[in-house]
Amino acid sequence: MRALQAKAVGTWLVAATALAGCVTYHGVPEEVRFVSSDGAELAGTLVFPARAARPVPAVILLHGAEAATRSFVYRMHANIFLDREMAVLLYDKRGAGESGGDHDSATFARLVEDALAAVRLLRDREDVDAAGIGLIGASQSGWLTPEIAERAGAIAFVVNKAGPCASWRETVAWEVYNEIVDEGVDAGSAREQAAVYERLWAYYVSPTPEQRLALSATLREWAQREDSRLPATLEIPDPDEVRDMGYDPGPYLERATTPSLYVYGAEDVNVPTASCVQRLTRLRADGRPVSVHVFEGAGHELGGVGLTGYRFVDGYEQLLGRFARAHVPAGQR
Image (cartoon, rainbow, N blue to C red; front, top):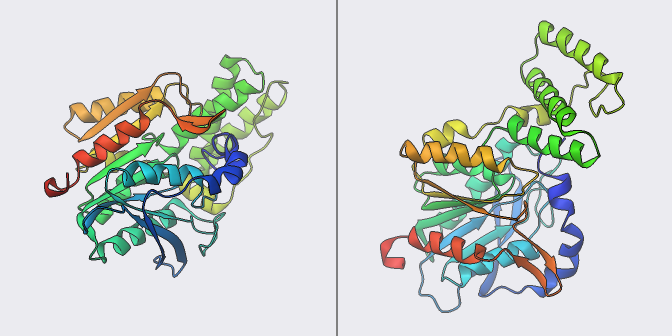
């Protein structure tokens, strides 16, 4: 299972193909290439605002779980910051578009390395203000931005669109729960099955003979029920997937010093908005520089395709733009 992938991506990928060519950059694009730590070459576009004096602050757009390219939603995000006189680096995710590497086997650790390579690219350029580099996470990459910011050091700010601040297991259990309910299963049964999935994932990460026996018995019991959406037996997943199952951004958030904004939809079926808000509120009370905003009535995408094309929810662009401008170096505001 690839977290935050099937539903969250499928809702707009068809439209992305048709609309990609309809969104032009509000700036001057330059094609760039940079190399990650494993030697994979990543292809991107660095776009500068047309009238701003250089060096300028810049943001790096990171990806959802899909094999993302520089498609229309990413271009629309780029324009939020270009309109506010910030440069934008967006790139094809490894194994997608013109980028090298393999997408299907890319672990979170590898995606973090790719993002760090993007940071290095911007810091090596004289036309980018190295003190004004921000990260924009989207869904899956929102797990990773706290680690990227800590390891890169001196990141000006982070914005996460529907970025999970809970562990992989907690987040994907919420996603699985909603998928099971969507198939017509009673909410109580779906909740129990999501809890069993959490036990399965914990076992895959740190297996013990005792857990194996207990889980095997549990799966046999569920196999007798018509509403079961659990596997009948223990199915050991791909090792790369197991590595991600243990991921938790919590330790990085507990140490965070980078101003960060998390933006959610109240009706998100892929990320547990309520528990993320609770966690972020606690972190803020403990002195971490995190903020959170929830758009009522919105889902995971915080936008959608309507009669006039794709639109973000009302206020989304302004919220992101204000936060970014407020956290670039004072001389650039």
